[in-house]
Image (cartoon, rainbow, N blue to C red):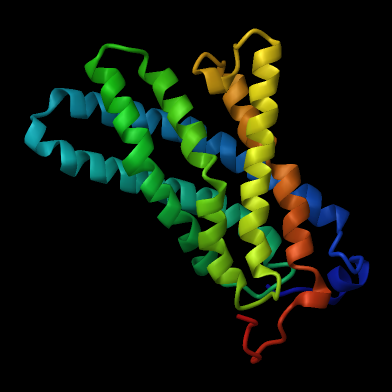
Length: 232
């Protein structure tokens, strides 16, 4: 489904569209809740398996778990985000989902699974380790923005701004959470003592910022007509 005429007519020159904005926030919120919750179970199961198996098999099992986690991230978050993106530009769902899987795989391999395995092996709280690692890895907005910008490059002249928008949104939210944690006596997620609710809220808090940026990046006035080359 491509961009509709009604969407273009209802949008301001700077790309604003209230319906798409709230859809972006809603879909991303749903995705983060699903990804964190299901991924939590997946990471704990993987951590228990890795804790019980021989060291020689750790790499294989960790790779399988990380691949499943990345597929979950890319499939859920990518598919729901695409439902908003497709209303502005004719981006194939497969391309957008794939752009989410790559960064997610790196996050699972380099951040999440090592944290869970270490917690299991040192008899620490694996659930806390997962949530903190997941929040840190999902907060790699610049990496996700870079991957998605490759897809957006074909459809908008502002594709480079999507990278900066992701970076800025995550930095703003992280800074706000850190300051709030300091005001509350260092009890926030960035101090490794945050509650589960704080982890969810930290991720969800980025969605209003990225949503506004996406609408600006995909403003009808800067979209590239089909068949024309994109601006380098």
